[in-house]
Amino acid sequence: MQEQEKFMKEALKEAKKAYNKLEVPVGAVIVRNGKIIARGYNQKETKKDTIEHAEIVAIKKASKKLNAWRLTDCEMYVTLEPCPMCAGAIINSRIKKVYIGTLDEKTGAAGSVLDLFSDYKFNHKVEIERNVLQKECEKILKDFFKDLRKIKKEEKNK
Amino acid sequence: MQEQEKFMKEALKEAKKAYNKLEVPVGAVIVRNGKIIARGYNQKETKKDTIEHAEIVAIKKASKKLNAWRLTDCEMYVTLEPCPMCAGAIINSRIKKVYIGTLDEKTGAAGSVLDLFSDYKFNHKVEIERNVLQKECEKILKDFFKDLRKIKKEEKNK
Image 1 (spheres, chains in turn blue, cyan):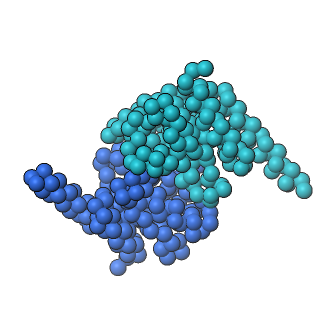
Image 2 (cartoon, helix red, strand yellow):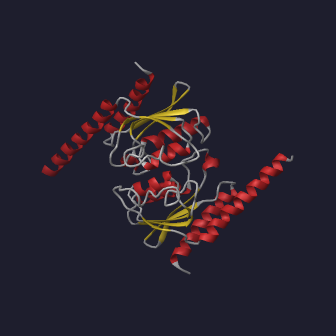
Image 3 (tube, rainbow over the protein chains, first blue to last red):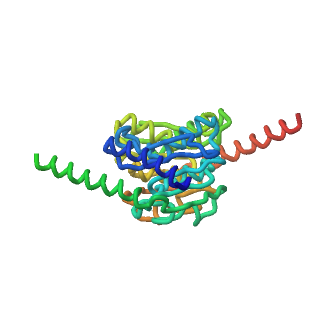
C-alpha cells in the first residue's frame, strides 16, 4: 500500500469517530518524518463550537506536541477539502503539504469555491494533492447524509 | 460617543493586553443585544498555537457562553482586518456583522488580499463595516512594530 493511502486511511478512521457521534464525518492526521503526530475529527455539534473542525483540532494537537506554532516539516491528510477557516489555518501554521480526500463544492477553499493555496500570495505556500482515496472519502459522507435523512424522517413520523 | 466607537475601544483594550505580552496587538469583542459577551486577544506566541488569533479566541468564548456554535445575533468588533482563517471562522459561526478597525494589506481577507465576505457565495453572508477608529487601530500596530525593532536591535548589540 502506498504511504499516501496508508495515512489517508488513518484520517478516515478519524472521520469514522465523527460519524459515530452523528457529526459530519471529516478526519485529519498530521504526519512528520513518516509518523503521525496528531489526529483530529470534526466535533462541531458535540462541542457546540464551530472552530472544532478536524483540521483545527489536529493543528492544535500538533502545536502542543511540538511546542511550536510553526508546523514547517509537517504534512496533513484530510478526508474532505478544507473550508476557508481551515485552509487559512493550514497556511498560518506553515504546514508543508496537504493531501485531500474528496472535494467540497459548497465550501471548499482548495479549488472548489476558491483556492486559497494557489490564487493569492501569502507568506507561505502550501503544496496540495487532491483525490487521495477519493471514493472512500466521498462514500463515508454520502452514507452519513443518507443515514441522517433517514433519522430525520423517522423522527418526523413519530 | 457612538456605540461603534465605544465597542472598538473595548477591542483596543484587548489589543493592548496582547501588546503587553509582546504579541502582535490585535483585539476583538463580540456584542449581543448591546452587551459584550466575549473578548479575545492574539496569543499566538504565548500559547505557541497559530489558531489563537483574537477573533478565534472571542468566537470560542461566545460559543461557550451561549452554549451554541451559531452566533446569529452577534456582532464582532476587531482592531485589524481578519486573516482568511478568522474570516472563515466568522462566516462559519454565522456572526451577523463585523466592524473592522484598520486594514491588513498582507493577509487581510475582508477586501485587502481577497474578500471572503463578498466575493464568494457561502451559506451565510456577513455584513462588514471598515475603518472604525482606524487611526487608533493602526497606531497601536505601528507602535508595536517600532518597539519590536528597537528590542531586536538592542538584543543584537548586546
